[in-house]
Image 1 (cartoon, rainbow, N blue to C red):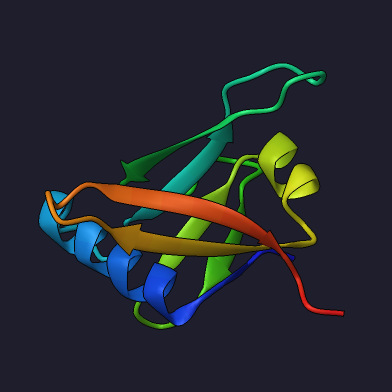
Image 2: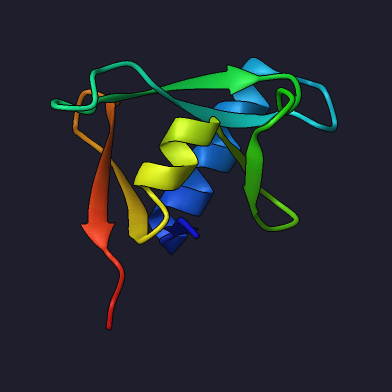
Length: 96
């Protein structure tokens, strides 16, 4: 199952708090590419959609659309904020 680094957890919690006031809100990762060239998009969602896998902890919830959950099951999500305040997410392999 996808895991989050401490940075990703903190940044995701901040983004969700800034964009939603709902108690069930979280980041939603969904597939936006093709099977040959997978890409993923991240949005703030008020709650998981039917079929979404939910990962995270008490401060951050991440909803994974079914295709994304399958593709990212062995990954770690990291995040960083650059000097201009732009957020970037990076997928890393899980440690062996």
